[in-house]
Image (cartoon, rainbow, N blue to C red; front, side, top):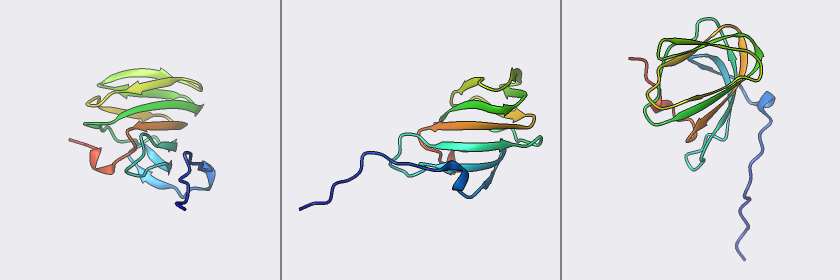
Length: 116
């Protein structure tokens, strides 16, 4: 008899190790190559780097803090419960001290992170 494959995954974001990212640090869940999306808990630092993605959408949801999201040189003010959809090719960065949820679609791929 073949073992059943679970049709769900669970992650405890606060227990995942932090990794450096262009926005500060991130705790990344559901990043497998077979995943349709991933979820990142991101602590944004003031020195976030402007970047873009060629094939990935991102949704940012601000949990804590205030600042702005720079989208193709336009500064959009954000505060808790602001959600921003970022499409492929849009150069972006978060500015200010914030904690956000970032949902990359498809799942995050570090090879699709461009700084030129």
